[in-house]
Length: 257
Image (cartoon, rainbow, N blue to C red):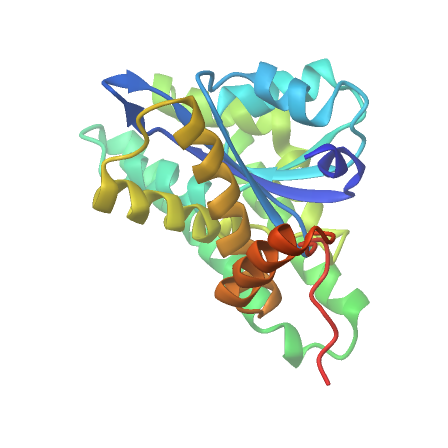
């Protein structure tokens, strides 16, 4: 868990199982080569402070949930990349709104978001990385203008415009840094294992079950991430326990012959 604070890039997500009728939150911390799960009663920024600390200076890929924004204010060196897929869902809400002005606004913004993703999907067609990045920047500039300067006088549109005014940079960091994904899909895919397990077993029943579930999810998802067998890892761990030798590590996949 402590190694997460040293990562340069993490993707995060959370989901809310119940334990004996009490709401808990399963947090997913997705690094480049491993994934860690943590179950906590809180869905607030205090969990991020506990796991990552106040001095974390990496980048978090996440949705627009308030805990991440609060953590950004508390840990002044952290940067965020808000998920564009979540933004599209919010814009589609405007497209289906009863107010005609909101619908028109939503359609205009959605058209530019689609153009942004279409540009990303045509990456191989550009002669150079610099040309590709400039094309993204042009669409971003058009999008920011449409959101902020062509806003109808409705509360819903004003909320979206204010979001861009406050956090525009956090939606488009991926343009200048190729390491960053514009969506939070990797964390959402990782946490699906938790959601499926919850439907099958109805969750945990106590503290020891929580700790076991955190660990088994961490093993299963990390092994999948690394292309290794979770069964083989667990078998080795059990054998080593009885032999009194060191447990296998999840920090890197074993060398393959």
